[in-house]
Length: 321
Ligand code: UDP
Image (cartoon, rainbow, N blue to C red):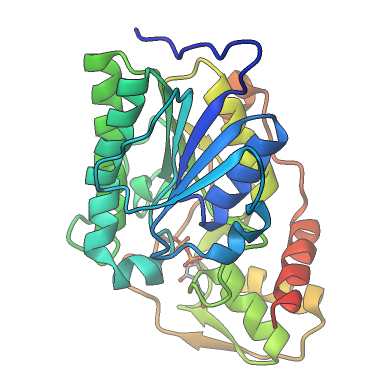
């Protein structure tokens, strides 16, 4: 199996982050820079934002390339780690960009794996709890194969990520690329777009504007929310570990969407009301990660309580209004 080339004592390790201008990609770039990496960020800004990386402009170890990662990736010089984070990730976004979502999960993953193979770099795929679909096993362990509707509205994302996992494993088996797969559960924090459609920015921006909170369905569906700093630490540990099998990273603290709406009203002190809207098709009824593998293999667990993470996120949203 190809080993990642060891950086010499003098040279910092080089990381390539696809989707570096996105919510999670930009937090990952920050963490890597703080840990001494040279970071090459790639993004085409389809859902990412230059605002997320503006603070890195002029950083001596950060370089940015505006490119669609479904195109051939050519980079000079050594690369030690490839972190493949590029993809629309909000249901509203991937409904708007279904073909780009399928392309970045398939062709984009192919290009990113090809880069890792060529550079003998270690590769990490940002996969998702969506590969479990509307899960019939609860909580979800990595051994669960999922319940996905390939032709439903979420199919473009779910199947792209399932294909991406299969391709990653194929590059590991056939080419000996050192690969890692993280299955990311619902994550929130600063740098989410206020109107990206996901529940955390939706409820927070509605509460801050005094608008009604739009609960879909009767709000009995469950989610488990992980603060971005916890998530990125878990993902860093996974890349540096020897775990080639997929690892769930997320916060197992589960609540219903209606409970979550009430929690947002409590924390923001907002006078907003709660209104009920139709439940989108194939909306998973329950979701909670089984993180036994992350605890055992990485010694990782989330540390940031929901109230603390939401306060940070509210602070960020207030600053942008
Ligand atoms: N949701 C909601 N109101 C909103 C946005 C989302 O009730 O304005 C619900 C959505 O139906 C889902 C949950 O919140 O059950 C989480 O949705 P999100 O889009 O954040 O991500 P998902 O976990 O479905 O991928």
